[in-house]
Image (cartoon, rainbow, N blue to C red; front, side, top):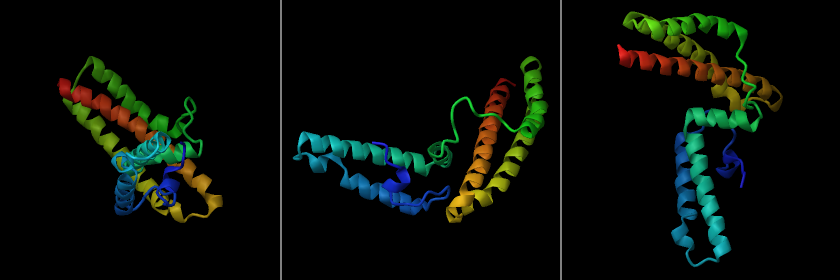
Amino acid sequence: MTLDYFEFYQLPETFRPDAKALKSKYYALSREYHPDFHATESAERQQEILALATLNTNAYRTLADEDHRMAYILGRHGLLEEGKQEMPADFLMEVMELNEQLMELEFDPDPSVVEQVESEVNALTATLEAGIEPVLAGYEGLPAETRPQALQQVRTYYLKKRYLLRIQESLAKFATRS
């Protein structure tokens, strides 16, 4: 069953869904598709109900989490194909120095360098988030013909954010060593 999660919840595709509406849809459908309420149904109908209950859980888990929701929307539009995740060159140049500092930390752990790199990564992340917020907030209201451009911006943001998260994970390892 590959029904669109937004369609399943009768919500518009958006990066900023109403959390309350999402939760209430989830709970309403959880009650409706609870297997206990369908125990006297045919085996076929019980399987159908179980599939709908599973779909409801997966839809909620995906749409309630910002990163999962973003990946889901990008994936639905074919923008997260494996092996085609090249980073913009300007971003790679920007983080190259951070990566070099990470490599140096492997051989020479230095808490002050960890702190400095952490600070730079946090600043980059904050700039990224500030830049994408208007796109995420306004996506739902965009005309269909401008959505592909917005989705490309979101894709770039998503990839950069994941890249920076990997750097933060590496930093966390160094922080625990020192």
